[in-house]
Image 1 (cartoon, rainbow, N blue to C red):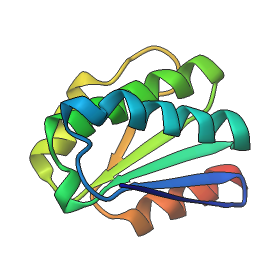
Image 2: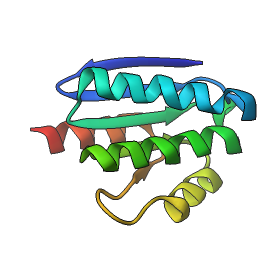
Image 3: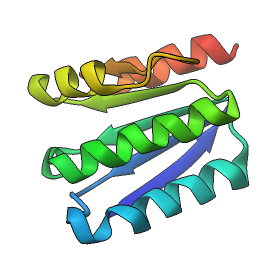
Image 4: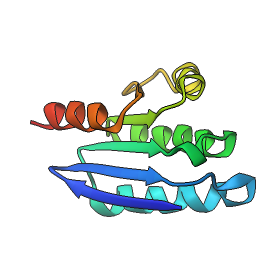
Length: 116
């Protein structure tokens, strides 16, 4: 359901499928553990096509709150225009804004540029 990598202080997380309502809290906990464990400079969360459901969107928004509380910028990636709009409209506006991209390569490149 979740994979991750760390490169140049950028924690890249990929949600491969929706956790569903029942798995949402567990996925948030796993993401929070990775963020606290790695202490990255930036976080990028990619929602693969199978993960573009409300439960996964909720996880991304919760992860954004966690990152904001820790002062860590975060980006999200999804190929779904409707999910991008929901993320942009629903994200917290205080602290670091949630940047939403249609492609992972653009998000990671922007993250690397910001980290440099």
